[in-house]
Length: 172
Image (tube, rainbow, N blue to C red; front, top):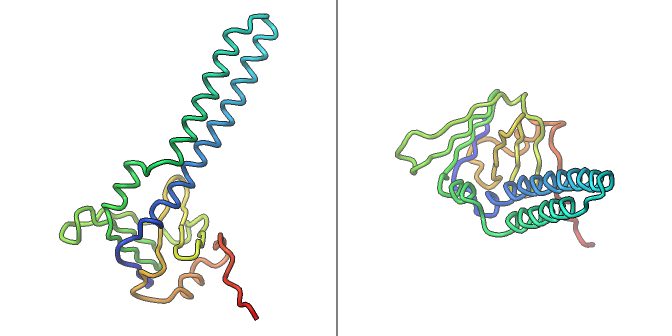
């Protein structure tokens, strides 16, 4: 059994969420381009450019606003994630991720997934990001390890770990 337990750092909570929000911006950009192409095609066929230019401008403006909102302050969900710590993640045959909503005195909110169902494990240096199907993913902060070893963790998820940072190199 491998157990991580404690308070997640602010950086480790915000980093993965920002990456997911970046995907929303990219998706909205693709939709904007597709609709703009459709509006311009209709304008060429009909010869009426005003509605096409207005709608294209509207979609581009909305895309810019989404992108700006993406990089500014943390969302309510991200703030709540910080408030919902401490967390406890026990990993064996199953990954049991528990979030203590109001400290350790109350029963935790718990999610259980089979370890074999993990799609990928991203190593960001000081934390792992275990991704399952759909929207389920867990942040595992390495310095919160209380039982087992990181080698055991990496052996359990062998072949699924993707290193997102370069390991430090020594200067000789």
